[in-house]
Picture 1 (cartoon, rainbow, N blue to C red):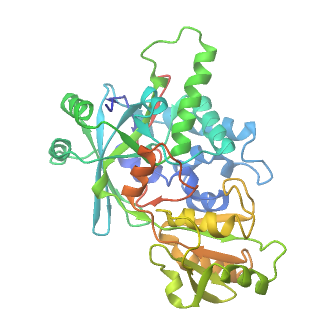
Picture 2 (picture 1 turned 90 degrees about the vertical axis):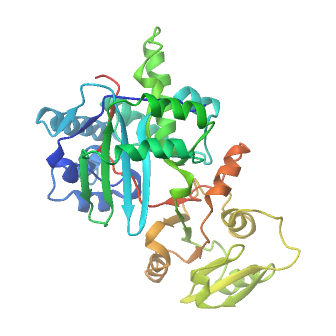
Picture 3 (picture 1 turned 120 degrees about the vertical axis):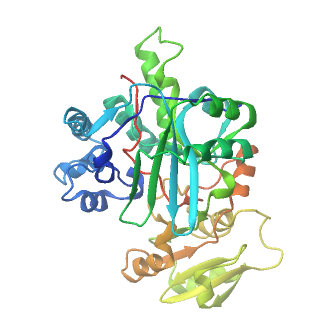
Length: 407
């Protein structure tokens, strides 16, 4: 059953929370991170993406980047912008996006349960990204951004969390993207801990596979360094926020393909037409389940599988990968193939059109969103989804709750 542990959060001074908090490190590229942090020396992007403070020719994975992250992090602490709670706490983290609200519990979760499968995964991680966050944690001795977890709702947990909402919050601010972020502390978390241990048999990673994997790798690295680590080591836990399943929404995660390889445009369409009915229609922007949208040479298409073609699959991302990307374009591993890129969330199909029209990509594929019950089913069966199958919105902010390994 799920173990949740209170922790002494390192967090922003109340009046600085809005300026310090930042988008997750992995949803923006270097240029976007630089633009977002410009003019705001408190932005946590100076810690999570510290390459923005170094010359452009410096590689994002160079030693100087991690040293700069530590320097910026220590400065926020020394100047009093980040403070640490005296006693271990759990926290309630509420996100409000337009007419949708998510209320989750923030705490530290067990890496033993992550390794054993009580905390379920649905994606493989990329080694370079996993190594990057591992180095970041080790350099700072801190996990600075939470993993996004979900669980099958239990009414008693929801009732217990809602009781905290009547108290004054630690933070309550709206970010430039219109999301309201509100956080409360739970002074006595014993009841919530008990409810999780009795009523949550499994947790599921919704977002943050690389953060969780990096926390696991950090523990291994620290134990190799210290042959007699404490059985109650802070490194045995990772920072996360867990939300009940019914409150979450998954957005589409689309694909951009930079090259058709050896195919001409006509040859590519001919290949598709062998197994798909191609309809030139604006409905390709929002394909139904089982169909694939395609933007190609200034037109939207809807691709419908011909009868008898392919094997049944519950996931549209798998259909695209198995029926188009691999057999026609030779993209066998979308995690590493440089010809593919991904567009998720609220950027939507307009972003696909713009990037194809700009010449950055040759063709774009639009997909129907994956459902959360599909994600849980695959995780329960110990299966893996194609990379970039889910985009959860709204996102948690980095820098609001930090789990320190050395304090």
